[in-house]
Length: 90
Image 1 (cartoon, rainbow, N blue to C red):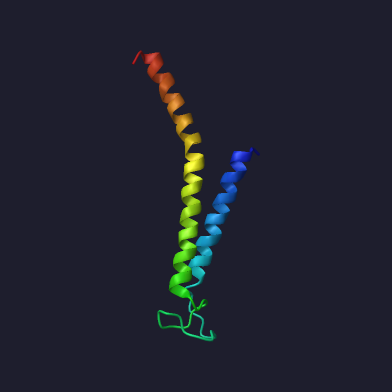
Image 2: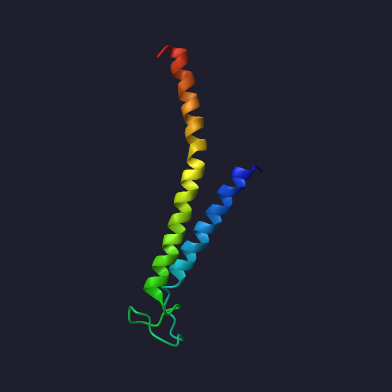
């Protein structure tokens, strides 16, 4: 496995982990000690803030993954189309 491919997978796992963690913070939990800012007992007392922060980290990892690895896909697609244009004379 190449280093770039491994990096893509690592960032994908990080994105999924933070997304699941962000969504899990909003799950109601009747056994929680305090109510969250939204007015119910949630898995995390800091529900709106923690959910937002975790989802922002997931989005950041997604943006980094796209910027780092989108060039690979673009170069493969553009190489193929460039060859076709050259062969057709355009």
